[in-house]
Each structure stands twice: as structure tokens, then as C-alpha cells.
Length: 275
Length: 249
Image 1 (tube, one colour):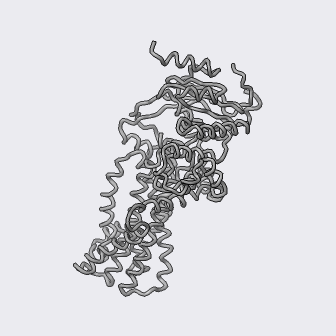
Image 2 (tube, rainbow over the protein chains, first blue to last red):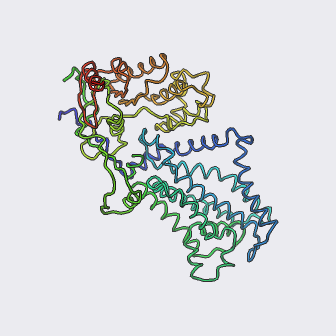
Image 3 (cartoon, each protein chain N blue to C red):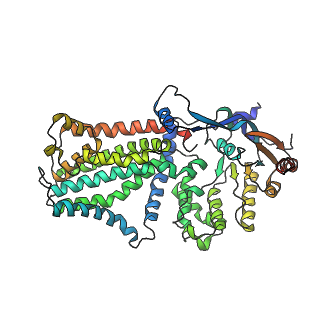
């Protein structure tokens, strides 16, 4: 070893979590601008082009409006059932899209992972940002629909950003967890749609848990479901449905615990990603 | 030894890289969540088995060897993309692998892909915008830059990749079979980039199967065979030995 070697540092040592997050933050534009370009690329070649980002959520809301607003009446126990339904559907779809997309964000970028050294957390973060941005038109439409069903903006609407922020943090954690597991166990992709179907019913998206679930034990179980917590709090804001303390506490716990747990799992053997 | 006498930029010491191929994906899942040792249920592929190598200032090192001999693995390990089983790799800066092609989006224009590729390489948007003209000029695609990349020929694509990937002249550049694509003009430009790196006292590692490229660019050649270095030295000698071993007897 010569004296010149003192300037050489270890290239194979993974960075500390602090250095890792600092580097991820320095490169944050990747997780914002790349998904923005992808959203643009998504609908290229279609007749409606970028309009699809608006038409798609409108159709989503429209289908539920047709079935539950016009054809049948399942509104037992809810004053403004249509508003109730639309808020639930739109928020549920956001988390579903983030998580399903996160499950493939590593495998889709294997080439990049194998050729460029960068904090891999940027890939699930890009997924989260892209899907969240694509969700904004749906949210605007949902709020317009809620007003169209007779609700008037109130002070409660001011709480909505906090609920959405909590959902964003939960989605981030879930995306990290699913991205890491999906990279090691591709079977997850087959499983996830079924998990979401179960969650769909367990989140009271199309019915009022208050009115249909009578067992107190089951009601407590619903409060443990993060999506039920998100949707119930958002409904409290927008359509004046009741939201118990257990739901608020549940949401707060999820939006802190999920990113921490997701980050810990994601960082574990992250170096092996793509190997 | 050879005539290269510059300071060491990268020192690879007795590097071992093993790939674990899980026969049972559940084992991979368990390992992710458990803290203790899990039962081993994987096959181990020894991609590098004790490689020691030094890179020097102002040097271009050629890396040759049959398919599957560990050339790409060695490059990946040098960038820190792969964990070592044992040994060490130390360097004065992090080598960058030439390759952003996987980040690029064929549906988008060349100009937008410059943004995407630059971000993947760690540039900020402002840095990319200030260099965009230079990148476009270097790629020689000024007329086609606003067309979707999927309309490019493979040579045009390769030029754009190379222009993005070398937008920042790295101190240590690793090239994995990138130069063989593209036309004569592109080869001239890429040779120019390599000279610029060497002029700035950097190092280049060039992996290729084309021996004329080795002779054109390299000061030394390393021959990898099944994860072990067979020879390091004068290009003409090592290439001759390699060709003799590869040709049918």
C-alpha cells in the first residue's frame, strides 16, 4: 500500500440511512419529473390524448352514478348516498393504483437498476407521485359531484387536505413495502388484486358500515383497516357522515407507522435488488 | 508489468461476487423479514472468483473474455451496484457505467429523453437544461430531437444514449459494449470523449468483443475467464493469447 492509496475510499459500502435519504432528496426531481413525462407518454396515440386523464375518472364516477344513483337504491342509512359513494370510490382507487403499480416498479426498471447507482427509493416514490398526480382530476370531479348532490362547502372541508396528506403517507409506506416484496416474490402481483377486492368490501366503499355492521367487535376490526379510516374521515369532511375517534386514531397511526415500516423493509438488502 | 505509471484510481483486491439463485422464492421472502439465519435454499453462481486489478490515471483498460466470463459483473461491482462476497474495491471516485438506455422512453421525444436520462444520472433539471444544447450537438441529432425516439434508427438511438451518458465527463468511465453501435462519425466522437477523460487524468474501462477497438483505444488489456483474470498486459499480447485460446485447435 502506498501513500497515494489514502485517497481511495470503499466503493462497495452501502450508505447510512441518513446519507441515503439525503441523496434521495438531492435527486427528488427524478421522482417528480419522470412520472410526469410518463403520464404524458401514457395516452400518446389515443384519439383523446391527454384528455383521458380527465375522462377516465369521469367514467369511473359515472358508472357508479348510473348503477347506484339511477338504477338501484342501496342507500340504507346514508343521507347523501351518491356523494358518500363517490368519495369512497375515488379515494379507494387512488391507493389501489399506487400499490398495484408499486408492485412492478422495480421489475419494470431493472435495466436502470443494473446500470445506474441511485437510491432505489426513488422508484416507488416516482410511482406514488405519478399516480397521485393522475388522481387530482378525479378528486376535483368527486368534489364537484359532491356539490352537485346537494352538499355545500363547510369548515369541515378545510380538514380534507390533512386527511389526504395522511393517505399520501400511508400510500408511500405501502408502496415501499409492496415494491420490495414484489421484487423478490413476483407472485404478489397475482395476489394483490384479490387483496384489494377484499379490502374494497372491508372499507365500506359501497355501503355504510355504521348501518350494516352491527357487531361491535367487527366495527372495531373495520377501524383497523387503513382505507376504511381514510374514507370515513374524508366522508366526514365532504358529506357529513359520522367519524368516530377510533377511526381518527387509526388513520394517524397508519400514516406514521406505514412509512417507517415500509422504509425499513425496503432498505433491507436493497443492494440485492436487481441482482 | 506495463508502462502505465499514473496514480491508482481504482483498486480491486481479491474481489469475489456470487449470485444467489433462489430455487424457492419463499426463501427469498423469509430472508427479507427474518433477522436470524434462514436455511439456505439457493444455488450459488461464482461470477467473480478473486479478481485483483488496478486502474491508473490517464489509462484506458480493455476488458475481454467469453460471454459469461464476468466482465459485466466486474463493471457492476466497480460502480457499487453489486455487493462483494469478499475482497474490496476502493476508488478515488465512484465509477459510472455508461448506460441510461433503460431509463429512456421510446414514445417521448429525444429532448424529453435528455431530461429523463439526465435525471436518472443524478443531474438536476437546471443542470440538464443548461447542457441540453451541448448534448444535442454532441449527439448530432439537432433535426430529429423533437421527434419521438421510437422513430430513430438504432444508430441514432445509440448516439443519443452516448451523448446523455457522457454529458458529465466522469472521472472513471466504464463502457460495456457501447461503441460497436453507430456509424463512423459516432465512433470518432466517442473516441474523442474517451480522450477527454484521459486528458483530465481519468480512467476508462472498455468491455468489447471487437479486437480492433481494443487496439484502437486501450493501453492495457485484462482477460477474464470464468471469473478469474487470465492475463493483464500489453494489448497485442493478451489479445493474441485470447484469440488463440478461443479459436478451434
